[in-house]
Image (cartoon, rainbow, N blue to C red):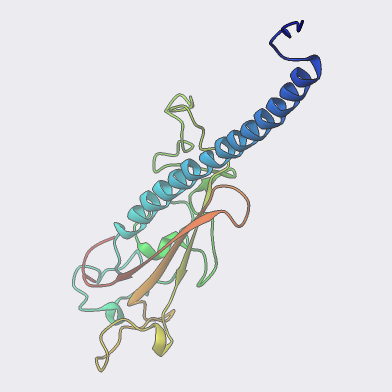
Length: 210
């Protein structure tokens, strides 16, 4: 006479099952953690890109004419006839928005934190980025730690001249600022985490008063 064995799991089988499930759960949680940590990076990069675009627009919208004061600024036919030649340099005692594109850089080819006040980047009204007039954080994510530099460059080399092949290229120097290359770099993490925008601005309207 045979007795029917009781169906179910033995203690050893249960322990093995729990170990397998624990290892699997640990792996899944690790993948989810990696996804969560990486998902914040595109958001931060997008914030940096939007800031860089806004700052570039501010620079490009500035006037581009003779340096002030200049009695001939309303009648000059070109940069060569300005009484005071425009050069790259941040004016002393003036605040943003500056009157000329060239005023947003310190020296030719030198990156400058033109948009920072006291080490903190501010908007055109002087308010730290990501904060309202009461210095309260706007939205759910702070923009603290995001910094931007602007670099202005003359274009004296043949390879850097603007214009089609075979034409008289537009070039610049410290005494004849006809065009500038503008570079905005916005860093949102380590030194290798940044977005960079380039643009060119030419003096197509030299008689516009800054």
